[in-house]
Amino acid sequence: MADHYEVLGVAKDATVDEIKKAYRKLARELHPDVNAAPEAQERFKAVTHAYEVLSDSDSRRNYDMGGQGGFGGASFNGFGDIFDSFFGGGAGRGPRSRTERGEDALLRVPLTLEEVTFGVAKSVEIDTAVLCETCGGSCCQPGTDLETCDICRGSGSIQRQVRTLMGNMVTAAPCGSCRGYGQTIPHPCVSCRGQGRVRARRSIEFNVPAGVEDGLRMQLRNQGEVGQGGGPNGDLHIDFTVMPHEVFGRVGDDLTCTLQVPLHDAVLGAHAKVETFDGSLDVAIEPGAQTGDVVTIRHKGVNHLRGSGRGDLKVTIAIHTPTKLDKEQKELFKKLAGLRADEGIKLVKQSSGFFGRNRKA
Ligand SMILES: [Zn+2]
Ligand SMILES: [Zn+2]
Image (cartoon, rainbow, N blue to C red; front, top):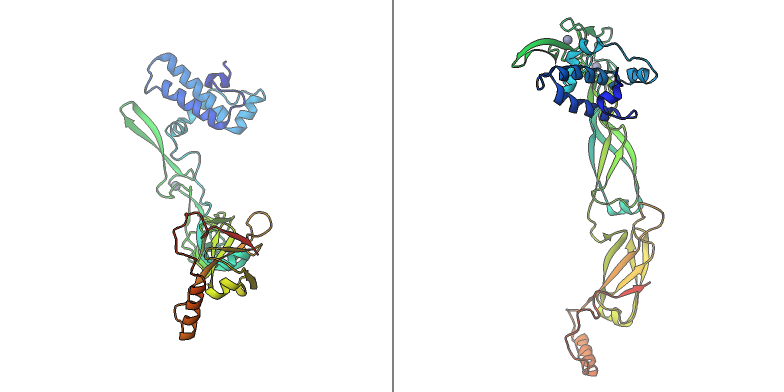
């Protein structure tokens, strides 16, 4: 008798997927519906038997250890199953489980720029399915139990003979009475209407790390919906939205802002107190400061998401030209203009001066 691995043309250490693939490929060639040759039918039986032995981990282990992995007859009693696996599914083996993993849930959490800068602990209310406390996920009224379906006798599927062009075939379809579960609920729990779960509002707490960006998604394992029939929870995905701030912007992990400086302070130099997320900070304006000059205050930006440390606070200077002058001020500017008559108005290269100079505070 040929080795089952050779029959399927796979290696001894082939994965379940490789075995399945090899079987499907051979079955497409050798299936009696497509290949009427007697040798093909013999090979189809051998291939099918090899697949049955190797696709089940217990029988494969047994076979690997020298056992025969079942007798030849095994390839015939499960013809329905073979066709199911060949045609990609159907009822499969045995009834399906009433217990399913819950769906993932999505929560959008808006954050202020200040929360993003330092990180924040959040407590948020969410609406998800939770385990039904009345039945504890069993789906049955307390004191009652599931009953074996008397239509399919617990198998979850109904075998039917179907006439096809190729002759009679046996197919398995999920049982309509128990919807494939093999068991029915004679007295469904009234709290959850036999679902094992109910919708409820609950509050969850989590830490938002500093440095998260707009659109970043965080995953909280097993915080999503409870599954049907008391199945395990799905995950909770949290999408962060960072709300725009009136004064501060963000570039990478740097915070940015614009400081409007009166003309005379720009000319003579000054110190300004600026209210930041770190409280009041001193910003030094050098004499002769120009519009577009950037004063960098080190380590007062957003805390890095990965690793330690913070970005910088970058203060861009915008010089404010006075518009409302009284008589005396106007006279002073006129006098100044006279003293600086040499300084003309001229075109400059694009790269000179504005919007490119950096200064360290
Ligand atoms: Zn219930
Ligand atoms: Zn049934």
